[in-house]
Length: 326
Picture 1 (cartoon, helix red, strand yellow):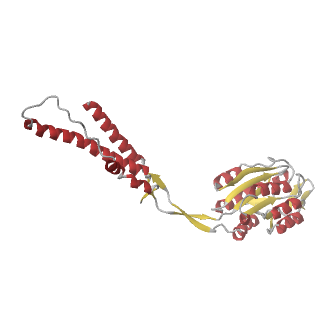
Picture 2: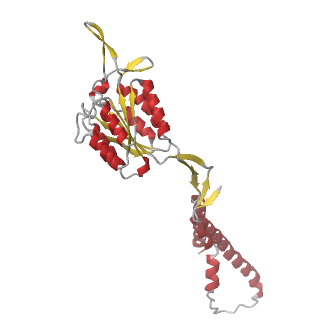
Picture 3: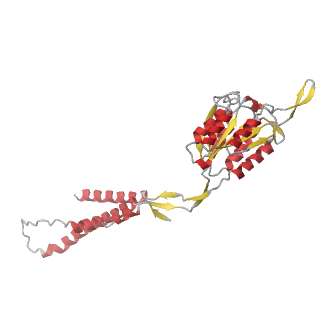
C-alpha cells in the first residue's frame, strides 16, 4: 500500500489559487501608439494564438506544482508486516581463555577436543537461538576484555567467539575482573534484563577484584549471574608406566562459583562433557526465555523521487520553451 509520511503537506495543493484570489493580477496598461484599421480581421487569429500560448505553460506548471507537493508529502510503498520477537534482555557471555582450557577432555563426534572448542560449538547454537536479545561477549584470562559490546547482531558475536584462541587474554584466570567488566557494561541497561553467563574451568588466580566482591557489585546492580564449571571429573592419561586416571578439573573452584551464582539470584551448573554443556544451555533458554513481546516491522521504499523528478522535468521544459519563444 502507498503511505504518505507527511500527509499534511497535501493541503498546500490549492496554495497558488489562494494566492491568486488574495492578490489580484496586475491590469496591464493599454497604450496604443498606432490604430490599425480593420482590427476585426486580426482579432480572431491573434487572440486564439495568445490564448493557446498562455494555456499550455499554465497547465504544465499546474501539473508540476501538484507533483512537487506530492513529492514533499513523501510517498512510500509499505510492504507486508514482518513479525519480530523482542525480549528486551541484555545477555553477556564471559568465556575463559586461560591455558587450562587446552585440556582435551571433551568429545565432539567421538573425537577429543579441548574445552574451548566444545564451548564454541555449543555456545554458537545458544547465541543463534537468542533472537530478540542483545548479546555481548567478554573474554578473560589474566585480564578481561570486552570483545563484543551488546548488539542484536548475533552473527558477529558468533564469529568473534569462534576466532578466540587460548591464551589470547593471558595464561591465568581473572574471574572477578570478568564479572566486574560485565557489571560496568550492563549497569546502564534496564534492571530486570541483565544476565551474565560465565564459563570457566579453574579458580581465580589473577585480577584486581575477587569473584565474591565482584558478585556483591553485581547484586547491587541487579545483575543475575549463571556460572558454568567446565571440565571432566576424570580422564585416562597414558604414560611410560601405563594408563592412569586423573582429575583434570582439580583446580575448579566450585564453591566460589556456586556462591557467586546464588548471591546474584542465578544458578551454578557443572558441564563434564559436551552433552551436559548443551543441556545447560537448553536449561538457560527456559530460565531466561527469549520472547517477551512481539513487534511488527513493515519494510518500505521511498517513492518521492519519481514525482519530484517529473516535476523538475516539466519546469525545465517550461523554462526552455519560454527561452526559445523569447
